[in-house]
Length: 117
Image (tube, rainbow, N blue to C red; front, side, top):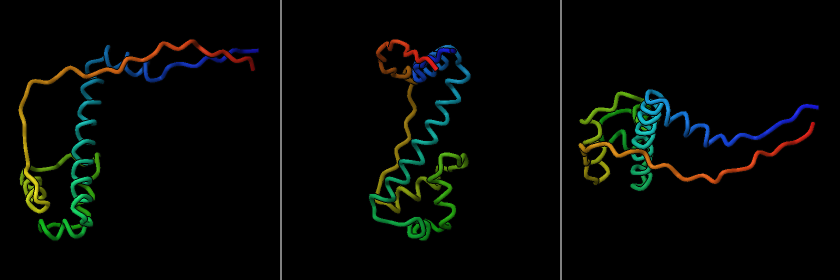
């Protein structure tokens, strides 16, 4: 019968990112959007506020806060980030720097597992 082998999916993804600069750039953009959304969510939760409470503090709606906490939202303004920081008693820090090369975890080479079906 046929043979099946496993593929180290993470190694395959890393190879694609290393060899496809456009894909790597797209992934980095999405990663940054995710980090920003997660940062807003964590800061709000650390302050013990609901989305509605934060919205009231910055003069917007609860759905607007939900959008900001979604990695799919792309229209975050500096003004809104400043309002959120102030409402949460935080400082907004924007940094311009040279990009660092992505850190890659070393993966152990795995032997392919073959199974007979």
